[in-house]
Length: 137
Image (cartoon, rainbow, N blue to C red):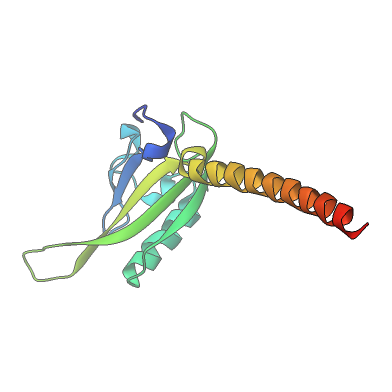
């Protein structure tokens, strides 16, 4: 299952889905070998596979991705071309899945810095207003 690491490390899970929409790799071993139609968030997973078939890479938001854990998950996905003996193009879908709170930890830090800058600007404006008002008198 998921490794424990520092929040900013973005450690997560990997899911691989083959061209027939069968799960090849999943952090929950009971999901391996199942068709994505049998999984939680099947509609979103189907959309992801269709996007990969169209040559797109993106991210998607899941709720309760792992059956053992509640919460929101963020997954980046891309296609991976698998060589086939018959020269057929087989593209597997690879998802890198991480809890959303771990993925967004950087935004919390940015928000804190922006709040600190805003407070500093307000203090600077008040000081400048005081200095300007005393010079005008």
